[in-house]
Image 1 (cartoon, rainbow, N blue to C red):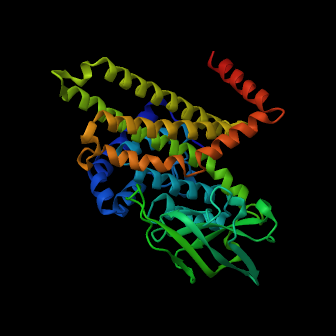
Image 2: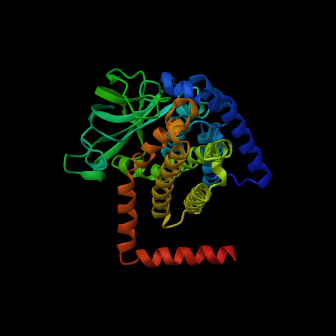
Image 3: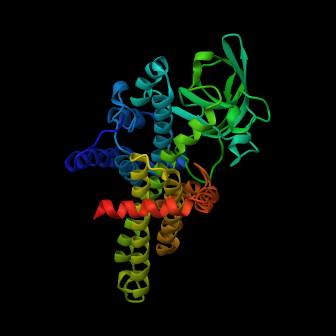
Length: 400
């Protein structure tokens, strides 16, 4: 259940988020990137602000905001630090899954800790050698009396080793059961048999840890299953609409910061006797970057509206928004670096960090090739094109 906000309420929320980003994220972003510092204390303070359960119901401490409000929040957070903003996105996705699919005991046990960010949550779907073919996962959960024994390895897990709870997708059906044989489990950090691989050495996202999650005969009670048996893959996929929008919004925020820095730089830098800002070629580049950023922002808002309205084509609209915004965000940041010339390549200017952090957004929450697959398959279904056309016509009528 989301809460409708007035214009004044929305602006007050965003003002508070901007202040948090400007005081807790921006000043330390370069240091955290260089020294690989995970900002636990800043995240705890973000929990005090309501950032741990942005679209979780209010019963257990969430703020129950709409997805339209949520994407605006993540854009503001990413202006401060895209890597930390992206971690908050993943944490919120986990909290939403528990709030949406958990029973009363599960929600009561985990949501107060997650919404306050006294504990963090991790999403464990991807496995080594599986990648985008997530339904082919090999991690198994075998029923043993009143427990399940889980064995397998999860790859590229944000927050691994720091989180208090891990939502683990594991196969409860036979080896050929596909997506229908996968269930979701809540695995606490102190479960015997749970361990973590070495910290991955990554191109970006240095302010959040990424490790393998290793489950070696981890025993959890049957009551730790999230939702019904065999529904784990559907639960995992349902969370990705929001996750994709959040990551797209993080790309917008990072790109906006890079663009703002580029505008400032071309005003200050003099070349061949005049400021760069006076050169028509530079003016055209800035205009194109701003235009593409706004187009991406409108697509992300459209995807958020689709989720809020439970539109039948929400998955496709989120996939389009994620693909377009993450491609545009990286490209804009990369062009901002180019406008800085050699200075853009230096850590002191903060642009190269944004470029590195935004690059992974084109891969996670479903690669952008998978986003194209989702959209293409929907469009080529017999009713796909008509569905898109109708939804567009409906939006035009509602706007008139």
